[in-house]
Length: 173
Image (cartoon, rainbow, N blue to C red; front, side):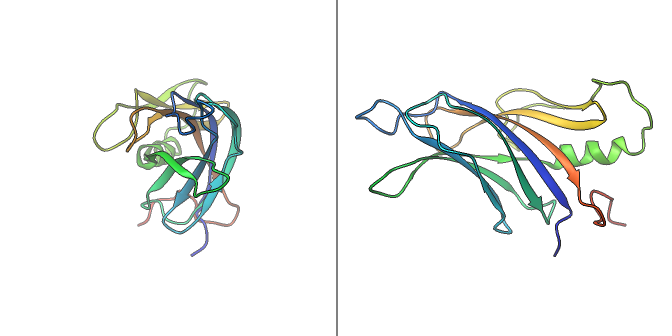
């Protein structure tokens, strides 16, 4: 199955990650974002930091809009397997709905919020997230709380990029 489009994910930063290296009192974090189809992208490594800043944009091909997208933070280790520092799922369903809705709305003012999503048991949002129309692009900035760990959050932004010739986010009829 060919990709329907690309999810452009900007990983801004992480906050209050757990300390994995007791000797240095920090961690050497990097993030892997993946789908069930084994599509995978990864940030660079930030050394000795529990509040790393990446400001990196990653492009993840999406073949299935229903497949979960998982964000996993790791601590790089030299002499052993890397430690997992927490995971979060990126719920793109509200975003996909907003993009599809936008195509039927016509002209809208810049900066309009198409949808607001509240934290719930269905998502890993740390606080409210808005899907916004900015300069003709639809983006969603979200702060995700990490699971399976005492503390940690990751700030990201997503944006859909159509692939020329693909079906994109057109509804299935």
